[in-house]
Length: 246
Ligand code: BTN
Image 1 (cartoon, rainbow, N blue to C red):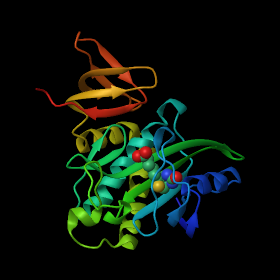
Image 2 (image 1 turned 90 degrees about the horizontal axis):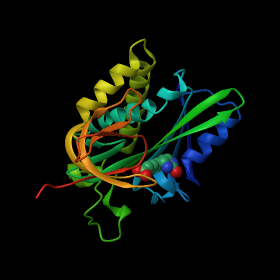
Image 3 (image 1 turned 30 degrees about the vertical axis):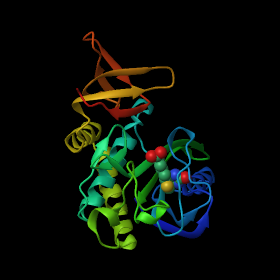
């Protein structure tokens, strides 16, 4: 995969730009990076605060040759790659299903994967936001978010982190494309996430809210949750929250 990076000072959303370029036929490996986003998007229609210089705002076009039912594994692959890149900067993050990166239960990075039909077939846009500095919050304190600066007590080098992120995405995507790639990616994700198994969670899906204990992931990355009656529910989309047992 040939990597090509396009940089912007300001843009609406790097995911939107990657999507526009993919629709016009951009090959996989095209990356969009911006210093600031005016309409940064998070999962479930949320806004992603994207102030100038306080975060890494990045999107990559991929054209995976996977059966469509396995496409959600691109999301797991991306989370593993972000974790690897952060590790190179002395930040050890946990992965909360499906692709939130947490340090001490505070979010340091979020990933928004979006599928799009294009002139040369389907594409997936992998959008990654990494909190670099504390100034993305007015008081510099938060109970729900953290940043590379707060975790390492030094000013992060955004350029090196970008290089490491691109490298990690490239190598994990190559793994996903191998013969036994889907299994390898599931194994890598499972090793990297404390949420994979045995965690008490509250899951909010579009239609319901359920509590249970995580019991691994399905072939396509769906989360297996054991309900209080012992049955297993498979969650394909939703928000997971850790529950503390009293
Ligand atoms: C989430 O946790 O809700 C996902 C957040 C994803 C944010 C990134 S920032 C770069 C890319 N462009 C966007 O508009 N969103 C993603």
